[in-house]
Amino acid sequence: MQVAYSVEKAPRLQERGGCLNIGFDSSGRAVTSSELQYGWGRDQFYYLSHTKRIPLRLATTPNDIAMIWNLSTLFMDDKVFERFFVGTKAQYVAAKEPDNLPKDSDSWDKIKR
Image (cartoon, rainbow, N blue to C red; front, side, top):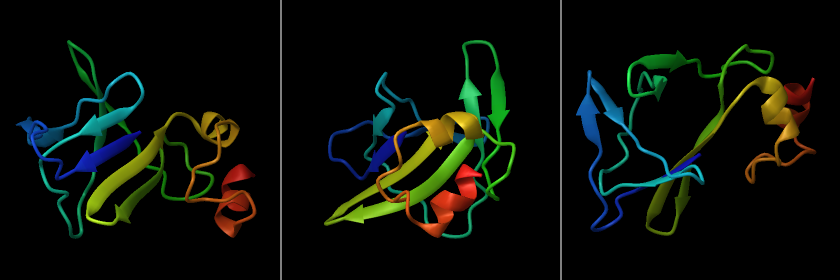
């Protein structure tokens, strides 16, 4: 999943239930004119259906039982992106390696186990 922030003419993020809601397209990308909120956040992730909101845990250790993996913020020139993977640990490990986490890194080896 990838969110591009501060993109001119893109829609602003809407707040609902005290949370900013990001709508992703079928390729897992979202674009918004809203700016990324910096600081010590308490990011919470949810799957939103038409009828309910299901919480998804952010992985904080390599062996975590979570659905959100490898949350990262990327700065490219004047653009800001947030990226993360949604799925089980097994799906995360089986998926194409994240661009910013090469397979030969210590982090990748810890997650793979």
